[in-house]
Amino acid sequence: MIFSGVVLDHSSCLQDNVHILTTGVRILITKGAIISGIDPDSIGEELGIEPGDRVLSINGQPIRDILDYRFMVDDNQLEIELQKVNGEYWTLEIDKNFEENLGLQFEQVIFDRIKPCINKCMFCFVDQLPAGMRNSLYLKDDDFRLSFLFGNFISLTNLTSRDWDKILGMRLSPLYISVHATDPDVRERMFGSKKARSIIEDLHRLHRHNIQIHTQIVLCPKINDGHILDQTIADLSALWPTLKSIGIVPVGMTRYREHLPVIDPVGVEQAQELINKVNEWQASFRQTLGVGLVYLADEFYVRAGLNVPAPAYYDDYPQLENGIGLITCFLNELHLALEDMDNSIAACGPFYLVCGYSAIPMFNSVIRILSEKGIELRIIPVENRSFGGGVTVTGLLTGKDIEVALGNDFIGKTVFLSEVMLQDDRMTFLDDMTVSRLAEKSGARLQVVSPGAAALLEQIRLYTAGDYKGEVKND
Image 1 (cartoon, rainbow, N blue to C red):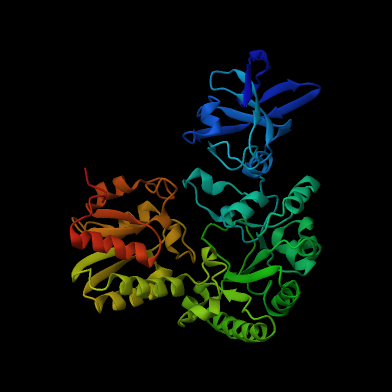
Image 2 (image 1 turned 135 degrees about the horizontal axis):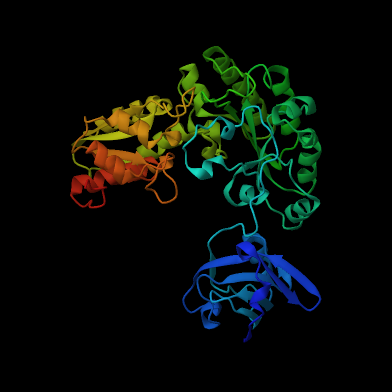
C-alpha cells in the first residue's frame, strides 16, 4: 500500500467546511464523510486515518452517502482524497484485495444532505406538531436512501434522474413507498403536488427492474376509502411479486390542524367494515398468491373493539415497524420467552409500565398472562395532552405528560419506560425532558427497557434475582 500526504492551500476553504479541491482538471465541491472511528488493525489504522478526518472522494468521485462508499471501496485500487482534522489534505493510493474493508466508521449514513419532502400532504403529521418538541421532529425527509437503509416511507415525488439511476443501478431493494391512492387526481389532492400523479408509472418502473417494494396507505375517510381504496388495492396487487406488502394505517391527527384540510377520523363502524373487507382480500390473495399481501394496523382493531388477528394473518410481519402486527408479535414473544425461562422468575412485583392509551388492550392481556406466573405488572396509561386529538400511541408520549400521570404516587416504585419514547441516547423524550429529570420530579425508580416482551421479561428477571444495578437513580 502506498499513500502520500499533500497539504493544499487553506485559502480554498469555504464557509461551513465546504471545500474546493483541484484534482487535475476536475473541481470537487463537497463536505465529505466525517469518520467517527477506525477498526483496530485495519487498513485505515495503518494509513494513519483518525476520527474526525473527512473522506472527500474515492477514485475521483464524490461520495454522497454510505451506499456510494460501500460501492466504491470494493475496488482493489483506490485513490482517496482525505481532509485531516488539522486541515491537511492527503491523497491516499491504496492497493488491496477486492472487497477488503478499510475499517472506517462514519458519523452519518448521508454525507451530503437529506433529501427533503416537497409535498404538502393534507394529513402531514409534522405540520400538526406543537411548538417546543425535539428539533429533529420538524424535519420533513423524503430520502430514498433512508428508505432502503432503514425502511422509511417515501413518496417518489422528489426523485431526479440521477436518483433514479442510482436506485436502478445499485438495485436498492426493497424500498418503502407511501402510495395512499393510485388514482392520480386523489393522490395529487392528498400530496398537494402534481408530481404525485405518476405513481403507477413509477411503481411499474421499479417492477420492471425487479426492485421489491412495500407500500403504505394512510386511510382518510371520504377521501381515499371506498371504491378508491378498491382500485388502489387492485392496482398494487397486480405488481406482485415485486410488491411484497400493502399496509393500511389510520390517519393520525393532533389538535394542531388549524391550517390543514378537515379530515374525519376513522370511527368504530368504519374500522369494523374495513377489517371485514381486508379479511376478504386476504382470503382471495392467499388462494392466488399464497400470502395475505394486505395488512391492517393494530389501531383499527383497537378502535373497532376487536381482538387482533393470529400470527398467520401477518405472514412474516413485513410492516411491523409501521404498527402492523405489534400486539400479536408482542404476545407471541411473551409466551415463548416465558417458556424459555421456565421457573427462573419467582413471584414478584408489583412493577409498573408506562404506555399510551392504544396499548391498554395489549397490556391487559400481558397482565393476565404474567399473573398466572405470579408476576404482578400494572400499567400506567398516559393521556397525550401535548399532541391531543386522537394521538394515543406510546411512542409519542412526552416527558411532561408522563410526569403528570406519575404525580407523587410512585415514589420509590419501579417504573418501566419503553425506549420507543426516547431518542437515540435513550435518555431524552420528545419534549427534551430527560429520564433523570423525570426520575427526580416523580421520585420513581425509572428503568428504560428495549421494545419487546423478551426484553421486559429479562428486566423483571434481573430485578427478582437482585442482579439489576442500572436503573435511573434519583438525585
